[in-house]
Amino acid sequence: MTRTQNMTDTASPITLALAGETLCTRRHSSYDDAPFTGLVNLIRDADVSVTNLETRVHTFKGYPMPTDTMGHGQSYQQADPFVAEELRWMGFDMIARSNNHGMDFGPEMVEEEGEILDAAGFVHAGAGMNLAAATRPAYFETPRGRVALISLCTDFPPHCPAGEQRPDMQGRPGINAFHFDTRYELDTAAFASLKSAMQDFGLANRVKGDRIISFDQLFVEAERSQAIHTARQADFERNIRAISEARRAADYVLIHIHQSTKTGHRAADRIQTLCRSFIDAGADVILGDGPHVLQGVEIYKGRPIFYSLGNFFYQSETIKRFPAEFYERAGLGHDATPQDALDFRDSLRTGRTASDKVIAGRTGEAYMKWFEALLAEVVFEGPRLVEIRLHPVWNYHERRSQRGLPRLAPDEHAADILRRMQDYSTEWGTHIRVSENVGYIHPA
Image 1 (tube, rainbow, N blue to C red):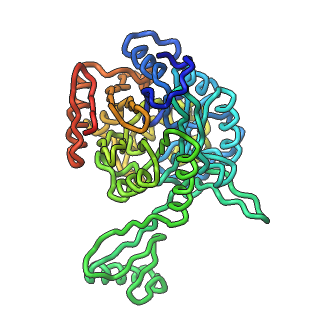
Image 2 (cartoon, rainbow, N blue to C red):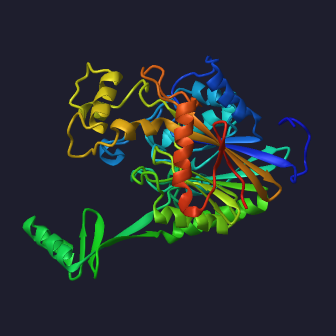
């Protein structure tokens, strides 16, 4: 069957191709090597192909957000409009937009990017000119069924969330931000130490009995120390309503979740609980990313949760322009170039340069895992999940000019990626059978 055949029977098999983070800044349609074209063909042959647009596609009409709210370890993302056309050429149909870079250049960027994606023929979700628009499901029509996409983010700078519209006030552009409120419980000794520190620093007014409000966080005295993360009820209910809407209007409901960059190869318990709640509410597939590394696959009630599919494109080192603050925090003057600033950023991330605000997290083998990803093909027959195919992707290159382009992984990397995915998925009893560099999951 081809994608253009006139098929209306939703019991016919439908294939969804899912990719993680796409941070793409360059043209890729000029490449013709087999590992790349083989990957392109997988994306094109699917009935619908989806990725998270981690870069921002715009022409600098907006204004850069302050470094103080961006975070000192975060870059400003930008790609020219041709990148949207290139991704459409590659075969992608739907774009998730809700992530921590969703407001790098402000409201003007959100609006312009939406227009660019529309012009390229994409269906997109997760960002908009107010909270309702950012949360709203987007729909893609295929001969084998209608697919809905909802995109949300749980780890973001404070300037990113879209705002709700009122009868007497316009909303605020931004992303579909999902908040977790954190309560830090400290045992008696730890609480006493923090209380003493507050007094030493002249912050005794932050202490209220068995509660301390400091570092923009709440600390309470308890029997043992632990962090308790609670999903904000308004965000939960809003997204559940969106899932209910999509469930009634589409044959398949796909939820994209951009989660924390700090969880390593296992999703935090709160993310796992949230993903299962979304499936309970009617979602068919969860597409996760954010940690910049691979995480496992869970089959929950016959529905797949891909906690993180990794960095599909990772062309973060060829962004052509940066704001003044990006240079200032590196101690660079007006004669510095973007590559100078990127050299400094990488020296911070790898620990070659010390910083009180950036923890080195990209060294040795751990850094190389940032260039591993999976393309997941998910096959349904009507409402029944029948097969998942995991294709290992490798996008590392020694030269910065070539780094970040996804290709089907060579044998040695493919075997390692799939073996680790088997390990990452064992806690849910997910069996991944490997054959000829492809991982297969067949739900029981």
